[in-house]
Length: 257
Image (cartoon, rainbow, N blue to C red):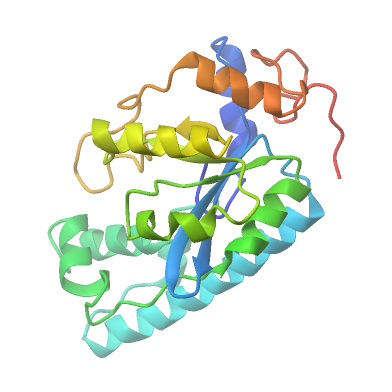
């Protein structure tokens, strides 16, 4: 599980995986920037206790809080008032636009979550506020300091693809090739690019639940097991195929930092 700018759900998710006999890797998705380009850096096999990682996530959480306040101010200027506390109550992790959109819907200002984005808080709309970000290099460093592997997240989205040559001069460990919005030809392209640069390949559903009224994407993307095995091997053998320790939030043989 790779939540945006948060690791608060990892322990519960790892425990659920353990209960069902599933393999599990701690993960995180860090919102970062390369100049003006937003880049999502996926970290796999991270230690949530890492002081460096905690510092970066705290910085982003503070930025998200400021973004929330600015968005609420803009919405209020448009005659739409919603309570900050009710938005924060929707998440135990990082607050985002999705939570604002849900509150706008539940308050009766829009009919659907998607309408909230389309009319008010989407890019270019009157209440849009840019996301909080850290430099790409800082995100990669934080993941490595936490003992994890850093992947370029969904490079087929948001204009990231054309900047891959620059991004891959940084110490990334892999590329997220498998994604619901990556067509087969694009997946092959990213796999070939990864292999040419001796990088790992990852993937995921990028599932954000059913908040927008669409079907859940959970399980819609299948990553070959050998890709997962190579990621586990690159993590130095600390990550078991199946969690067996009494602390499912931590890989076997590791210690907190």
